[in-house]
Length: 413
Image (tube, rainbow, N blue to C red; front, side, top):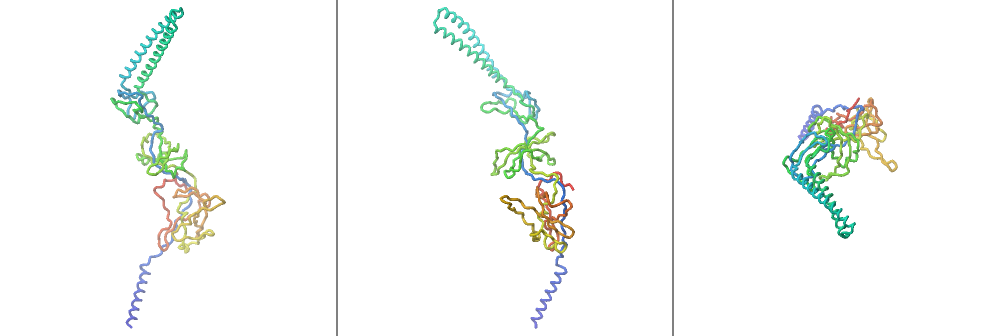
């Protein structure tokens, strides 16, 4: 009898707890809300990102071919110079002495040549009258030839000394701007195996180029003529435009990462870009300006049984609904003869109270939006996600990465 009362008490407690949970603690099922969108017209692109350095298109280093001490400088950093303008001058004292010595040697050789020419003429007359032997005549001929050669040698030495003297004055080879100056007045420069650099001159700083380091995984999509944009830290809110000029074949390897130097031409009419700036670059490998676009999440959405209460779900033959919160089937490649093609993608379209699955053909995909080539029009209502149901959690909600480059031009409705 006592045990029966205990059982009844336990049953009563369980019933009371069940009623409390049902009426007060049980979470109410949230109504299902679909995330809808319509295809829009806009620009879409695929791109490659890289970093690089801004540099002048053409840079010339100006040096000296003779050794000496810098006696004067006529240009400095940021100086605008013209072709043929005097930039610097070396001390001429020693080289001028060499020129004077060469002139003296030439004068001596010419004097000796005059004497030997007169002696040859006498020896020739004596030889013709038979007064001297053939050996004496040959000696006179040889002496005259040696004197002539000495004159030519002295002239060559004089030309060399005068040329070296002209090298003491250093002129600009191009019109441009001085980027760097490596010497100061009084400094000695030694021209031995390597020509010492005195100035670095940029030919035209209104035309710059960016040398981008493109990863080997991306270089296959980069070709000459593609559009590019980049930013620099000095003007973080400004976007500079450029065009791919060249892709160098020589790889660069750093920490087992292979990159290829890619040159990008960039106009610099306002002279904001300065040599050496670090650039964050986007190279647009493919672009479509007037594409029909849907969000990338729409291709991943798959309805579940929670929608059966409010909508009639009409899948394509052979394709059913996935599990709640799941994604559609991952596209696989189907064989066509010996080749392989990527099969179409699928989206769900709302028509009244029906969710109808449609097969579409896609183009470019920037991980935020997808280009639709066939299967949709601008009046279709596409489902990209849902909220509510028993859990109330959003399913396949649209999202975008803040690190992806923005599509140029935006969406146009």
